[in-house]
Image (tube, chains in turn blue, yellow):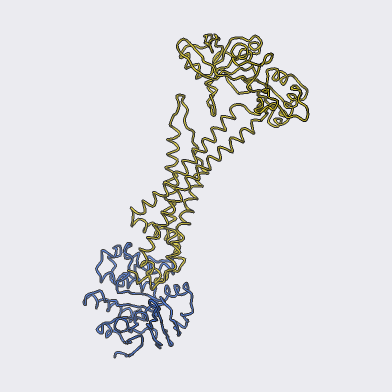
Length: 224
Length: 413
């Protein structure tokens, strides 16, 4: 489903060229539950931006469902993000001014008009927030906010969920609750889940660990 | 997203910063308010000028002495001219002729006195000027023939001098000469560019010349301020003008290669001239008000730019959810349009209110009010302008927002 061929990403940072990702080759199949590991600066965030179609590779090919994403226009990229990719961020990235359900509806509003309220309710129910739908993010705990953002990611029934340090801002107990939700999401809904993390404990809970250092893959192991 | 959803989002984000949105709104409100009220006053002025001129009678032609006489001797329009013009002719386009001899006079009644314009006129004056008699009767041809010392007063003059007394039959003194009041005119209003009909006094033209005039230096003739000629109908105004011109040229013995020694102008030309001027004033006022609208618009742009910067992260989140450029563009443009149309509506309402109150203010001692006009046209125009202001000044910040790269926008703290 995901195929990276010789993908590199180069930035211009105040005149100096930075090779954030160097010639990466990677295959991820439908339904996998994998993590991308690495210290900060290893290129894992850049990798996630490319995988999520927020950014395009400087060179090489990225095929998502056999579409060469690198050659698409901004609008086409937006369309793919809207239809196929669900994002979960470390800092949740919910809109603070609107309620939980409106945040979830927003996740669907750019690709569909139909029935979005109903779908948003179902998604919130799945993450156990049926009673908190009308609350605004500021009225919720970190764990609840992250669950709203999971609901926002899965409401569109995505092909892939990308989670960037999903437990990074949470305590261990809440973090493991979030990991449980992500695990069951992968098992029950057969959604491909990719977690970007620097914590080995989190990575161990996934079925495949891809480790990055200095923009290159240094190991790619499957857990038993 | 549906239009409803877009509007809801726009209202939502505007309401999160109520003070800021309110102050921005105020700029637009003041802009629209000043456009509406200034243009409304201009239009009202335009209307009152036009109405005043039209109330003086229709299908009229004015003949006055030439202002720059080449011969050196002052040109004169005489009572004789008026008599010749009013002689019956075959197929004449002229319906009636009335001379006017205007001078300032001091009118006394016991201890009351008033300075005003005293008009020397003939019987025709009443029909030509559309005047109505309230009490008594108007000046007749017989009065003119006999140089009778009689006067018809405008209603204001009558009220000021005579108060509640029955004016008919009373004697007043005009420049020292005793004259009997034979009638009072009905209220006429107007009075733009001079003394209102209601303030004037009317006496027979011959009386005015022989008994009252102090600057009579043309023996044998009665020199007039003007002759007013009424055409038979509106299609015959030009024909009547040519007819009067040729009669006067013949009578004044003007050779064919010489210029007229009088001025002749029709009412429509006067009206058109005034209309040009007053419309110019309206446009000028509108343009001044437009400046404040422009300032209001820049206020909207300023606030939208701040809003875009503040919400960079939100833009990034929305883009990661699949929002396209046009979605973001639409979101911000709709916010500024919502802002400025609400401002527009409030401004239109306040403008209407302002015009209403200005219309109630009385000025001068006679009960005249400042005329104002609130037209649907101006309201629609203002509404359109305010919406366009929102679109125009909102599009630049919105474009800026839509072009943000999702990765950078998400990284923004």
